[in-house]
Length: 157
Image (cartoon, rainbow, N blue to C red; front, side, top):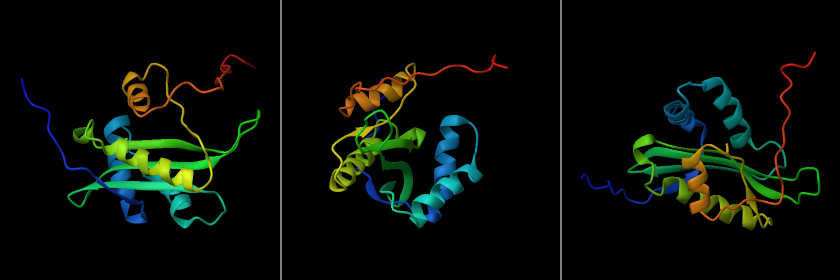
């Protein structure tokens, strides 16, 4: 039986414009679809910060190489939801999974959200994505007070 590879803990830092190619590469490893245009639009908003939204854009490095990212922001939605930190993108190189990269990013995001005055973090995960659900649960996330509902409109005229 092969022993698990142990990696040094990542250095977590602010996401930069120069990280675009790494974000695209890491996302492509998981989705099989490189989306440079999409990620350029998303990262531009995080890096420019030309509005008053509280955003968290983080990169994780190991030995000077970017191996993960996290994007989130403070949001308040309808239905009585108080402002909270929403995590909407986390990506880690495939060979660095289970190496505490994503957990380190999540820990730093939590610190930053708490410093901005919010007391909760939320995210949305496909109910059948067991590895991602397991990751968030292992990091203390539980089912929240809201239930997401949807209606398929493909058959509607």
